[in-house]
Length: 143
Image (cartoon, rainbow, N blue to C red; front, side):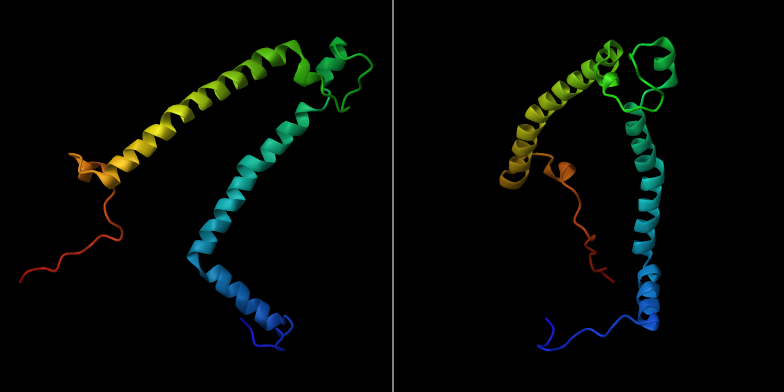
């Protein structure tokens, strides 16, 4: 905690340069920065474009006249209620949620039971199921 009455000096060019060098000089920070750039470029941008295209009227729908009075580029919720969407989105989504719920209901109690057995009992093969100590414990060499 800072002393009473003490204020941080204003950010100077020299101080900013030193803080930037220390930030970039740490390999962990560089790896995190590269990972975040890749995540944003390969996942976030395409996902946002896909979500935007979900709510925009396409040229094919205007040509087929499936959405009355629509123009290309208008925003619509028609795609979320179309008959094709039920088949390719809502049914698989429902099935995935049901499977996820059942997996959760089965795996959480099973994992809790296994954790309790590992900690509280002396089951055979406990060493095979448990992770090795970290950092590895080195034994003094006998010479």
